[in-house]
Length: 466
Ligand SMILES: [Mn+2]
Image: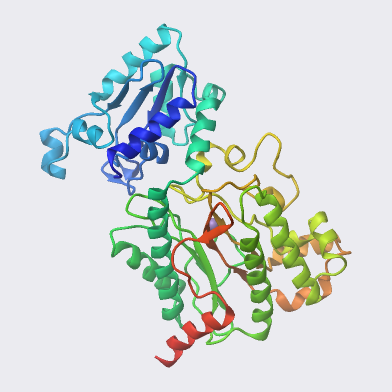
């Protein structure tokens, strides 16, 4: 945990943004895999971590906006628990670690909230994303599951988003650790991969690096020779000469902040000429986007800039045609780049996505586009100093999508479908790094990871001559 003062100040800042009533924070509980005592790896709710830092299941907290009172609710370990889990810190000491002096048993939560309701005071809560939260809100507030979305406190949600969007120095330190760990995973895989290996073996390399520092991956690892399948969690393929491996993987910091990096490298010692051409376009798009990061710039514009670099590059290769700017405006480039340029990153790898992407990435004046490709952009709003985000352009050849568009002659004035046959087995390339927006521009988080064609080939060469 951070020092208690950090959590005190965060709650103070939150209180100053809200009018009155009671804030209810629900921590997460253990989540069973196949029976109660065989649970998934415990993950605390990120907002609970942000304001209270306590990484234990079975907790809740209230912040009284009128009285200034703060209470952590939880049950002490029984002797039965201790026999199985060893001695546990008291709820009072856990609460003291985050600057809360009052604790109550969890069964007291309902009567306290009932009293608040009887007084006609507002109870602020955030959107539930686990079934358990939905049941708790039903039990505690008498709200049917279908009534809960409409009863969520928008002022609370907006205040939390505003606060968590701007990362403090101690958070940056954690994010640096997470990204550094992520970089180690990628360089290890780039060194270890060789023809004949399975994707699963390389996935094991990544998990071992996380486990060896008592950490875990921040999201399910994408590691595939089929990089064109965007969220590909299958690891059953064998690496063969001539293919590329796309790896999207990140680790957690000790305080549960996420890293999120992607690299694409050749199974062979070197990229083929065809792979090099596409790789360089993706890299150029990433570098142009990074160059454009600064406060006041809408990230949607940065996404469109990267899209133009991609369209220009593909036009140069004869895969697209016409005016690249017009092609991007029409959305033709999304055949090759169907996802967004990046997203916020923090305690969650897609930070605060549980509140709804549009509450985090868009504003009343900047609405999300409905155009294919641009509609997948999670972050569109103007950047502010302290935002941490990913920059992750890619080019993919998705045979199913190409076929669908070609039959429909979709954007045929911008796409040379005749030339795409030679790319059907190409796969996909994505390059992703994590940046903090500074007052004057941006700064890379973590250590630089091999990225240019020569840097990647140098790492692959070490493997081949070893
Ligand atoms: Mn990402």
